[in-house]
Length: 424
Image (cartoon, rainbow, N blue to C red; front, side):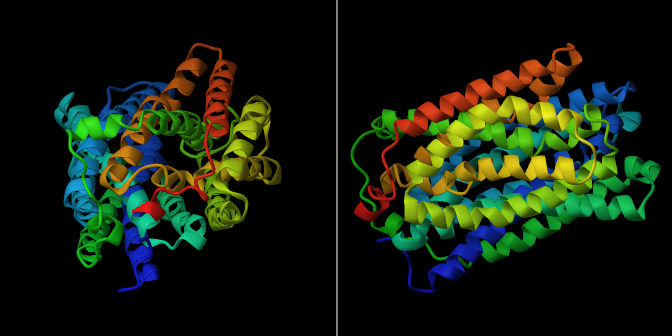
């Protein structure tokens, strides 16, 4: 049964969440500081070209996430959730350390972006396995009555990692001039990330394995056969992720650049507003997670599908002309409130759909595919539309994918009342 009593589910949740925090800090530090280090790794050009180049490597890192999800998801279902979580954070540490010490284009020419790409590929493998393993771990250790609330802390820490990256950016912007940040200051967040990952590696070695994994019975057949025995669930997870992750990366990761390049905000204004909006967004997650325990997961997901489909074009259009301050911030927080209907329960609703013997892989693999194809490419696609002079085309693309997520939500049974975790 789910919900460990020894050493206690809260300690287990904390252990999983703390590791998740550092994993996602390391992942988002790249995006947060890309405006500063991007020009250092590529041939001289204008800011839009540098942004496109760094965004392309950001997107390529996502292509490794399905591979990481397969490898670490299979590992988690065979060797245990704890083992997979420990391995993933070790890989993230190595990727961050490589970026921290990477030579620039002025030093080694085209070898510089190749090293940056290698580091991002390692990080992609790591974070690809992290989502499925941590979503499974946190869902399995949480008791059924408050599973939505407790599992929502996966996204609290995911957003917390992004907030820490932004907070460090704000701090460095206040203490260093732009020339110093572009010259060497951008290395600081990657040094910090690698050091924190070492600490989390030690922390995760103290976690206890979940009872659901220990009691799982593996049916006959190959790993692929066991995974493909759940086609409906796999398609639902893929469709939800396609729309949900595209919305997430549009209104979080890409938003900072959108406000600078399209709305005319300064980098400091965009960074500060993003930090405040993300802080509010993180605080929303437990509220929406608790709401799913009372109202059902399906209710929230359908709400996200409807609101995101209707709001995308007007919201992005308004943000493109919004002034720095209350107007822009209110629009950002409103969009993140809509997004919370999906993200607060993203992990738990997927974990509740699969049996324990294939849960980490079933959660992680279609999620990683959806994020790699749609979420990871969001920034690059948006900038490409902008470069072609048809920026509004991106708005309609996001709207269409939100509609796909709505169809998936409508086909989903209420996993709160029909959780596979309870049958383990």
